[in-house]
Length: 102
Image 1 (cartoon, rainbow, N blue to C red):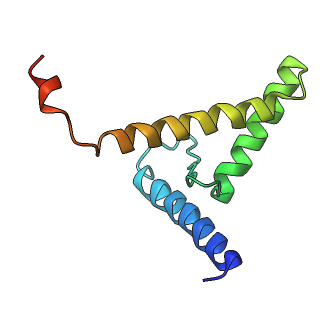
Image 2: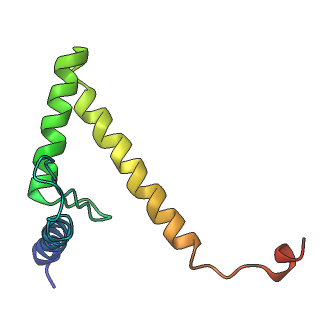
């Protein structure tokens, strides 16, 4: 598999996850707007989610006057993804029987 093909597969996975989220939340009241945000561990985002986050960052910048707000938003989201991955990985580790008895 070439590097370019691998990147395409990951982007496709993010796009597919976004589609599944859209289907899952289609029952929301029409007074709400739902934007699926799907982020793969190594970076690819679904197009709708990326567009939404960029627009959100732009609006935060307009409100605060700080042009770094979009970068800060992406940093916070990156940390949230990494934290979630760490929790998922930690949950697969065997527990120490000695710790359970304490």
